[in-house]
Image (cartoon, rainbow, N blue to C red; front, side):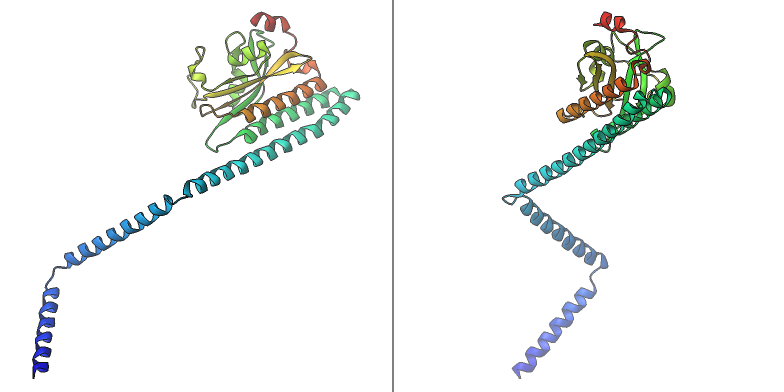
Length: 273
């Protein structure tokens, strides 16, 4: 008898609870679901935070960063060695053209090799994809010996390559030519002589200039800039000087007459020192 009574009581209680649940508004179930989801996200967040803060996690992160940097450095060195090897293979051919007095071919091929170097330097020194570079060889302008003009360049507009002129007495490239020493400016906008061209669409902050030396005298300037401040490392500077030395060899083989004024105005260079 007691068993039957308890069963009836339980059934009545179950029906009562079911009726109350059925009468609950649907929005309440959504809120309960949202609360469960939030608690789940918080739980996962705490677990991830604990893993991140676990002993050794900082060392793992540092190891990954160092490994990525080592891989980038190895790739950069491989690209540089490849470029140096390519240029080294061209020099014997230039020497042969010079020996056989094939002046027109010598000049054309010499310019072609220089253009290849100028095109490849920004690619080998580019450490970050978002950095834009312009690279050029500047020589003394034969029409105005107080200025430098672009002999070979990449990253410039056609008009820019034709019209750009730099004062030897005040520009960073000009001072590099005068002193015969490399110059690295981490932010050219802080230079007192900096003047942004009105037509310029981008600002280039970093500037690295290296003299191209022939018989211990500066004849031209190898220049590269970057759209980010202080974007060149000590290794970049060392590599850049290697390229300037290779260009000096090419200038020497091709002949001084093809430097377009670079050695014709030694007095102006001396006066600017």
